[in-house]
Amino acid sequence: MAIVVLVLWMFTAAAGIYVLVTSNLGRARPAVSPEPADLEAQLAPSISGAGRRETRRAARDRWDPPSLAAAKSAPVVPGFRSLMEFAHPACGIIGLAFWLGYTLVHARPLGWIAFGLVAVTACAGLSWFAANVRAARRPDLAEPPPSFNGRVIALHGAAAAVTLTLAALTALIARG
Image 1 (cartoon, rainbow, N blue to C red):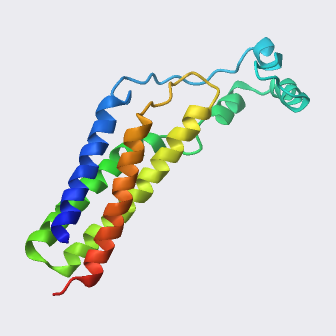
Image 2: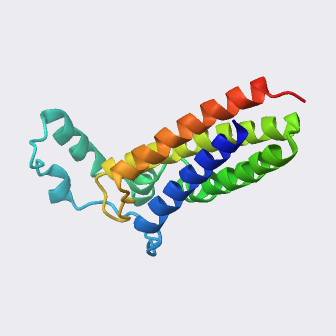
């Protein structure tokens, strides 16, 4: 069973590498500080039809100083997406190394460490996915949101969920 999890984990990693290679994350992202939008753009109704509430909010926000406008459009946790771009693959690779050690030696602590790392990796991946979805929904165009192939993301997530489940089952029923 440990070998099945190892192969599945490597498949999941390969799908993740494919997602990273085919995305637009490798392109340089400009470090632009958001500037307040101009008054006409704030007050003009959008194509979908802004309601009275959005128009009132735009009228009220036009008096915001530049620092407040920048703070409103800044991400909740600065650099979070960049941190997840590093942490998700790093935890996955380290966990894969521990699982390889578990597969070769069958020491239960290695299996549980690998399971913990795959759980951390899954949480980091879900957080990264949520941050990217949130960035894609933002109206500002200062930084283009990352673009990923949805089918490969779904395949990567499904394989990761199966890997997490099988790693837990294997570590639970392991002898040694």
